[in-house]
Image (cartoon, rainbow, N blue to C red; front, side, top):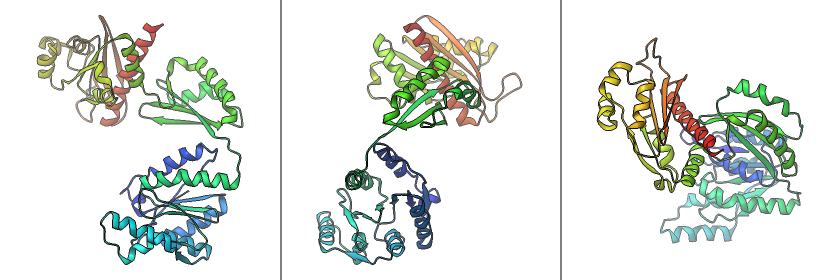
Length: 398
């Protein structure tokens, strides 16, 4: 796969096209061998094509099909294949009609959008201007995501039907783990990673570590059996699979019990509330999120005795407990900590966070010492507060 565009190299645009194409290719059992990003240089694109064609059965190119001088993908492919660029009359007429419909003046340079190497098969662009084209096991798409999303599925159906390739879709099973460092996690479960037909990897995310097993649909049962062995080994640290999130699982548990929830945040500053509010329908159970950042706010908004703060400090087990008592819902979560980079002491260093959780009348508090920068510490505080609540709810369920 070749992604064309200097903006992809200098940070001007984030690549999302390759992620989408990989997921679509998975449905057909095709894996990406290489993902190459190249700038808007004729020489560089051609050199990348040489490598890709030598090492892949199918070369997929995204970007550089537009009308401007820096759109060089078509020229590079035509030179690489020693084919001249042509324009088919019906495709040019179709392009001009699109411009007319949008009341946009058609310029001479717009002819370039329907140029293609001689002998190419075009893939109709249903949402944009330039069609994609396929020739000699090279397929090229515009870089505009909505146009790629329109044409890529059409191409895959055509390609696999034409090649008469047996389809065995890729099967991926993700287990989302929290509370075990990556190196320790590997030691605990690597004994199960012995099947040569299954690829294994660990992906560290802000919300935990993904243990990924990848094979084909025909090996699904084998993957599922290994999954059960992993559950037997570290099940208490697995909070979900695939696209599941802690906040979704918590909300479903709360809806089943008709529980309401609120949060009071100091160091996380609204990040915890945002996790819940992002989910449609959460208004059924989520009542409020209070950012009580200052000591004054903690006293005024959460009715915490000022003497408690003076005695124990705002970052303390006692204040975390009283923060959840200042909320009226069935479930309450509080966070108070030192996110840094300043403000820490030897007794209370940067990264110290207390989380309070109240379920009805039962209060639990948790102390953490996180590492990382300010953003990382705040994100970890959110993650671990959700995970501790989830574990409490799961234990109550049993």
